[in-house]
Image 1: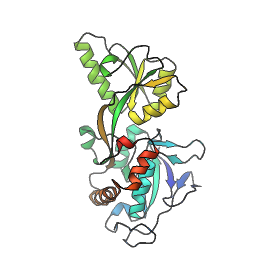
Image 2 (image 1 turned 180 degrees about the vertical axis):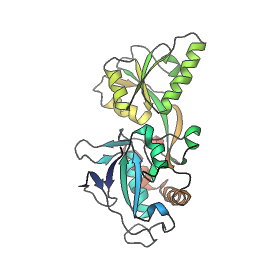
Image 3 (image 1 turned 120 degrees about the vertical axis):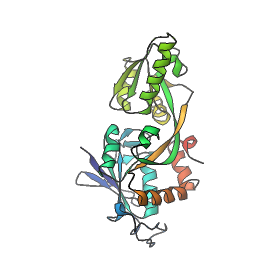
Image 4 (image 1 turned 180 degrees about the horizontal axis):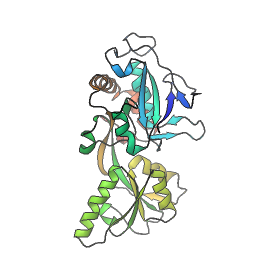
Length: 285
């Protein structure tokens, strides 16, 4: 069941209200300017008439979406970008935590307005929701320190056991590579599926698997925080865009969000947000 986390755009402190974390907006959504940020007119956007942009996310993918252990508040690149978008729209932002594999179904049943959860834009997903790209990220391979299997690229995973989060594009990448491995008689890839990326990384750390693949930002953090037990291979595989996911009937919301994002891309706020999370190379030009 979705859990709501609300966070105010202009406030520094976060307040817990009925099991949710909330943030306040700068003005109303009628185009009037009640602060130092001009409002984009949202008067024709049904989803924003309550003054809240609800964002579905899975909070287990540091540094993109996670819950800070000390503040118990939502944090990460997507959270900061969602707050910046809400500030441009002059509405509040409310985060709804949902399992990654359930996000598309949940947005399509109006459990929330949009998805921002390190979701890679794919043809298959684009048949179910519309996307507004906001970053560009590739897949990375994690191995244990010293790289005992000597893996260097995706093709080197033939015959190995690889841990991965279910419902991610990496599952498809492994399945495609596994077919190539079998054709080349190099041994199949034993794919271990986990509910979250941290679980897959833990399996690698404890030698339950030989490697793990995930989006580069999460792999970078996992290697950095492993205490030297893991290392990140240099190659970044198939960089693809992350996208804001919306219902296909949310045309007005799509329009104002695209306008807000267009105003952010290339700005100091946008660039500094990516740099703050060590993701400068993922920012769109």
